[in-house]
Length: 156
Image (cartoon, rainbow, N blue to C red; front, side, top):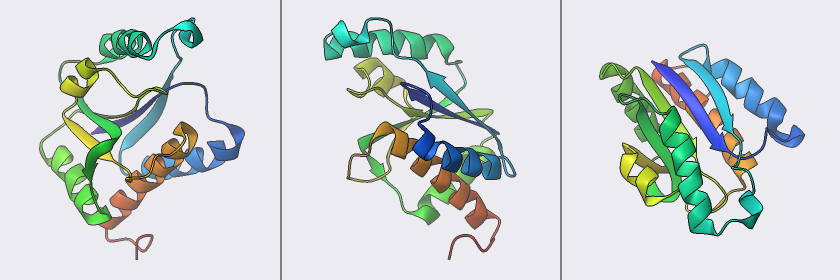
């Protein structure tokens, strides 16, 4: 199974880049994993939030394949502890999911169309994090879940 980590916005900021790269490299010991940073649409600052979300939806849907398993990160999503997330990841692998995409939406979230396309909506926390930190937390949590599945020492 391939894991793709998608985020709308700018490149990784230097204050989180090293950590994101570290955990993504570790995650690659279990699954093929890479990041896709989707730039905000042109003139994003001049668009109303709903208009911006619609433009972002067009960009995202154009890049998704029919059989991609889309996991939307949203504070209103389902909270999972580490064991539940590890089991969720294992189930995707058991189901022969070819590509599992974790999506961090734009500054105003995502459109209804993306919410409907998502196969699962997951919340990292009931807290809201800056997108840069959410990327780091996502990479670390996925690595942690893989270490749980392999019964390794990282998670204790």
